[in-house]
Image (cartoon, rainbow, N blue to C red; front, side, top):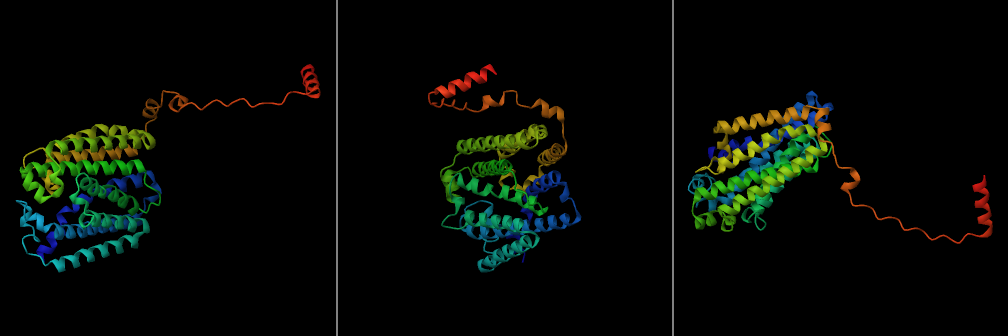
Amino acid sequence: MWPYIQIARIDHWFKNVFILPGVMFALLTQPELLRWSAVWSILLGTAGVCLAASSNYVINEVLDARRDRLHPEKRHRPVPSGRVNVKIAIGLWITLGIIALAIGFGVNRPLGYSLSALLMSGLFYNIPPVRMKDLPYLDVIAEAINNPIRLAIGWYATGSVVWLPVSLLAAYWALGAFLMAVKRLGEYRHLNDPRRAGAYRPSFRHYNESRLLISTMCYATACSMFVGVFIARYHIELVLTVPAFAVFMAAYLRVGLKPDSPAQHPERLLRSRSMVVIVLVMTLIVGFGLWFESPTLQRFFEPTIPHQYLKPAEPAEKPTATAPATDDTTATTQAASHT
């Protein structure tokens, strides 16, 4: 049984920590959700997202086996090394997905739909003929969509029926793309052979170190812009979190540039004490920023440019033609002026 447990990648469940900001944000902005029943639904939502993620991991292991044999480390995984029966693995993939959906829809429909989206993203990412995993840049963008989906799972697991802010979803998506691009950069540098890298992952036929590094800057900039929109529109006190986010992104890129980077295997990041400390501190600052309200900060960031200058001027109305005044009209006007 152990090889089948391995392909479910239980050690990767820690990635589902990305549902926590959704939980925190929902509870802090909608205090009425703070009740004991929410604890049970949050636990069920966490179980659902873990099982859905494992379902995606299983089909990923099965479909990537041929190329994983070309990787110096991944060739030892259970499927490429021949320790797994593919038919049983496919049955495991379907079973895990069904259980995850049953849990989600058992809690509430929005959570069920969010878990369905997570499973669908795994299909588009892994299964031909779409298989976005093989397309440069789209591989990162497609894998990163799991981030906003996890955010939505945390949000709706609390029982919230309010729509998530689009700016927050977009920021979470761009953050995921940044993390995935750094992971690709670490893998490419570790393989250190463009031909071997292209055989292992088709998108690497287009990538090189400079392109991957430039793409990380693109995703980081997009994330920063969307975070700024969210902060300005919903909670200006979160501006206090900006330095923490900047330090986190710089530290993660630094990890990605190390030889045999831990970013290739996110589960190994837990061994990096500095990254764990940075993430914990950033989480505490974000929680404080969501809870904290400061009229001083709100006044400090009030717009100083008059509102009418931020929009294009409206065209002046053309004077309407009036009929020539008659003698009776002229007489009435003169009488009114005398009065």
